[in-house]
Image (tube, helix red, strand yellow):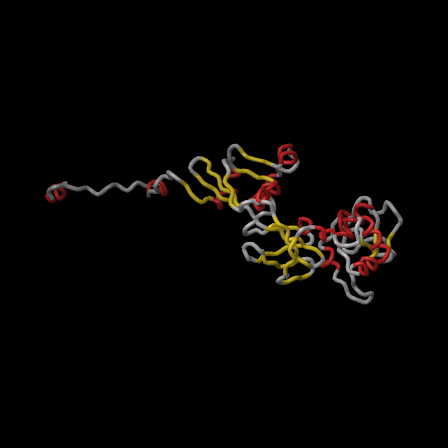
Amino acid sequence: MKGDIRKALDYLNANKVRANYSAVQGYLGFGPFDKVDWTEVLGPPRQYTSWVVHRRTGLPDGHTPADLHPDLMISDEIITKSKLLQAAIEEFDGVADDSLSTLNVHKVEVADCHGNNAAVVCPSCKKPYVISGFLNKGIRPCPHCGKSKAVFADVKAEWEATHQDDIIEPEQVATRLMFKKEWLGYDVWVSFTEDDTTYRYPHDQLLQTFISRLGIIEGTKTWESDGVYGFPRLSGEQKKMLKRYITEVRNAPVATQAAETGIIIPEPETADDPEELKES
């Protein structure tokens, strides 16, 4: 028996039931005396992982009160047997085998795997990249060509063909500063021009900066409903944040000594006859 931690956590969260570490350990295929690195298996403490607990205390390791699911103690039930956990998960899924087995995919060799991370090679462009079993439900498109998706499943990488319409080009051109949900996770760079200045910025990185520093975008109707957020004009603060991403400035004034220092140096006098300068 070798289970999928994502399936276990999905089941526990959906049914609001806890399972102790021993049951999860057995479900994942570890022996009763194996030392398990739970940080590596579960990832960082958060509400999603708080359903895996100690039998005696009913609480998980390393979780602060904010990391505990609000419904964690809603039931006294704690699953303590790995076979019971496996049966419950299989019933929850509707199938005993991995749900990806029905996909039309191509299995590939994993270049390297550590915990819930794997290095794979895209079958289209032959370039390597990393996928994670915890991020984006274990699915990541190739950041180089976008022509395939790697699916992390049971320490295997499987390839799912991407429809041509789903391919997101890594270079996007916009008419203004723009963020789109459909660009998330594709390592997209966006270029736009305002006045005489052209910018090229990393979409996901700048989005997080705007959300954390300016406290905007998230929660707005256009972002939540339409998945798009744009800025008609850049403010002074936004121009400062984008200064590092300037790629071109057209019609820029030529820098002069007077412009830079405010000091005007007079031009030397000239005369047709050198004797005129001596007399003056």
